[in-house]
Image 1 (cartoon, rainbow, N blue to C red):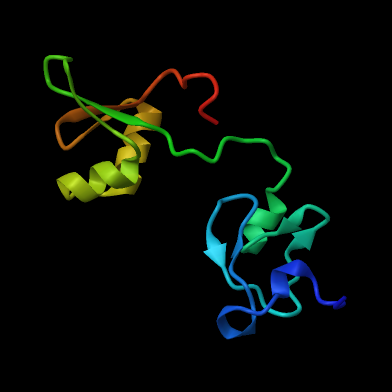
Image 2: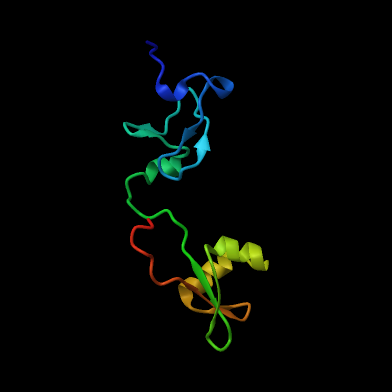
Length: 118
């Protein structure tokens, strides 16, 4: 038996890829990886610091409404909407939060999150 932890088994560059317990990102830990607890490893200080906060890490769905109030489209996140339309994602999030129009459209977060999605 080796004294080496399971996550440091031989593999790519002498270590095995590990999945962050908070965000699900795959990463290669350093030999003295400091972002860990009894449950496993975390990819960054942010994930480690927020490991027990219980908040949903799923992005908020964004809805775009036209001038007459009809729903034009839904996007999985403000980032995806900005990427698709060529707009600024920070301004889209601000419009969702304040209820102000951005680029002539009304932006809202989808009001209900289905149970079990988080």
